[in-house]
Length: 159
Length: 107
Image 1: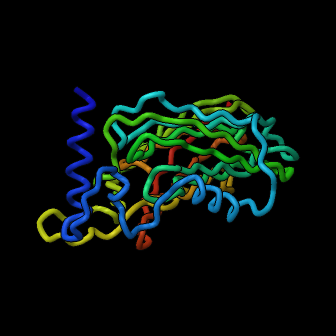
Image 2: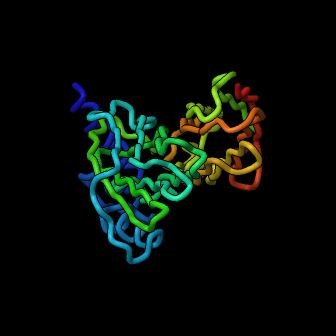
């Protein structure tokens, strides 16, 4: 039943997006035709703009996502970074990116040693099933990265 | 501009790391939606910044993009240093500001 739901949803959106152009679209990618779209390359570019040529490493950062998000309008996510959060060793910032939304940027969070614990929770929009990327910038210059997938049943960007 | 709620423990021990939760009502208009009647794009209006100060300095800050859900919720941690207010300032596109403070008692 849910599959039927998605199909109808996509068709409605494609018709909206493609109206007047005469293009028959099967995929929902046409939704934001003309706008900047996020994909793995756009996310890589956005990360590079933030951290420069620094190498990213895996581990030390966890991204908590639901396996399946029923409502893409509000998907709970949380990021936790391993760190003593002392004045000499702490997490400076966490950036969150989307590989499937109309734009790659989601949010940036800036921490301080006074944070005590480098964990943040929020709710975000996901227009479709996709990968979410979290990047942590440490005070010692190191950069940790993690990527996880989410399945979205009903996309939400208000399209 | 908007209604905001902040939840934090009333009393904490010095040095304790405590969780703070904040919720603000805002539709976070993405700038991608079209008005169904006129076909015109509804202009973007989101909260793009949240700054949290405690003990006289910013302890947590964030920049938001349209992918943040409507009625943005955020939770994070703070280390208790001194009694006093923890102050939240949300800024929306166009510069509108909502502020909310809660008092923390450090025993």
